[in-house]
Length: 323
Image (tube, rainbow, N blue to C red):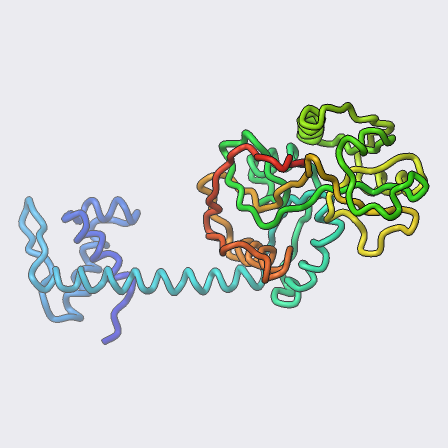
C-alpha cells in the first residue's frame, strides 16, 4: 500500500490535538485541506480514523492503531534521515578549532594530516590563541571547541583532560648543566630566565612555585611566543621555562633539556567546551582522534563522551600547573 507521508503527517497532527482546527493552524494549512487529507487516508485504508461530532474529534480503535504505528515509523524515519545528514556533514563539513600555540605548532599538524586522510573534503579554521582568548572564543561560539591547558576558576566550561605536559628548562650549555638530569626550582632561580607572558596564569603559577621553594626568580626577558623564547635561549641569553610539548624533536645542540623539580611544574592539556554544548559530528570525530593521537593510544585516558564534554573544573593541585 502506497501511503503518502503528507497524509500521515496531517493525521498525526489531528490525532495529537483531537482537533482539525489546531492541526490546520500548526501546519499552516486550511482546515478544509487538513480534513480532505485525512479523508483521503481513510479512503486508502478503508477504515474510519476519527469519530467526528460538531464538538469533538476522537480516534477510532483503528485510528489508535495507526497513530501508534505511524509515530514509531516517523521516529525511525527521522533517525535515519539524521544519520544520513550527519554522514553528509562529515564528508563536506567545516570546523573551527582554538588551539594553544605550543600544541598547534608541534603535535597538531600530524594529527590533522591523519584526519584529512579520512575526511578529505572537510575544511578547518585553526586559531592559535592563548587560554583567556580561547575561552572568549568558545563562549562566543566562534569555535567548535578548544584544545589547550586547564584554566582554573572557569565554572561555565567543561574540561576533559587528555594528557599531562611537563614543564622543563632549556638551558644553554655554557651555564654548566650540560650533564644535569634535573634542576631544582631553587637552582633555576639563580639563572637568568626567559618566560612567556601571554597568560596571567603562568605568572600566578610561577609565583606559587617561588613561594613553595622560598626563592625569587631572576627573570631577564619576557616574551610573547615560545619560539622566540627558545631562540633567545639558544643565543645564550638565559634559560627558558617551556612546556615539554614545545621542545623541538631535534633540540638545538646549544641547549640542554632539563626537568624541573622541587617543585615540579606541569600542565593538563584537554578539550574545552561550554557546559551543555553538543559537538557536531565532524568536530566529535576530530576530538576522538585528538584523544587517540595526541599522546598515543596506549597512554590515552578513558573515552570521552564526544557529544557533551563532561568533567569538573577544580583548581589544579601540585605539581604546580602552568598554562
